[in-house]
Image 1 (cartoon, helix red, strand yellow):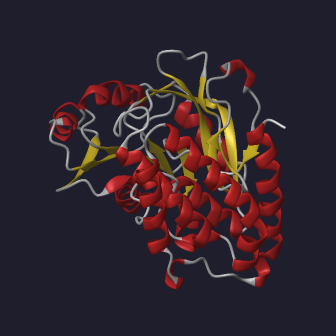
Image 2 (cartoon, helix red, strand yellow; image 1 turned 60 degrees about the vertical axis):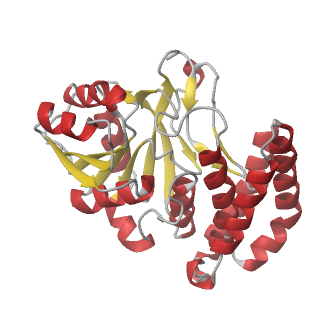
Length: 319
């Protein structure tokens, strides 16, 4: 019997990707799961296309682009299932994708999310994302990007699942909250995974669940103002929101180095002003009511997270 799972596909002007994505869901080894497409005010006819050619898909339309977080939150609320798979519209799933994710999360009762093995669409022998990590420098990074896919064949615990292709246990959202819509896009999956980690839950990488991914299908490739604005802003907000003040002080030397390195990186590419303005917007987001409340019972989880932040710093630097 198929587990109680739904697939949520956020969409914004994704006409060129949508057929391949939805066709791949029709070819899964398990069937009968609802598919919900949440459209962020597309003007390319992609929502109409889905309604006309995929009657099994429920289409929810927004009048304007409310961002990735608002779209997936709406889909999660509509799903009302035990598990929810979030899937980018610029992906093509291998036939065992849904089955592998459901099996993986079902056998791990303290698991919040399981990440798929994302490979590059044009070069499926190369990894696009094999789980996300976060480090004391304030940097988030995808494991394995650009490396041979056959090196990543083992299930393992990770800091966060990339929300472009992952399954989530819905009842934990009731405890920690949905995706934070202040993020709009970028680092929202690190944030929700961080909150789950604080509460004592875990996230895993599942290599048997494979998707091919175009990458930046909505926002565009390379560095652009949209990405820079939200990623720099959210990098500040992420630290403030999830770290208690003593942890921020402890990591301050690392964070200072991390943000300074990023500043020089973007300055060399002519983006210094945009990066600094993004940081400023991030500081303006920091208010007391946004911060995750510290609870003493979660202290062991904070300590484990801090250890991982240090370990992931060395992993990122290749030490």
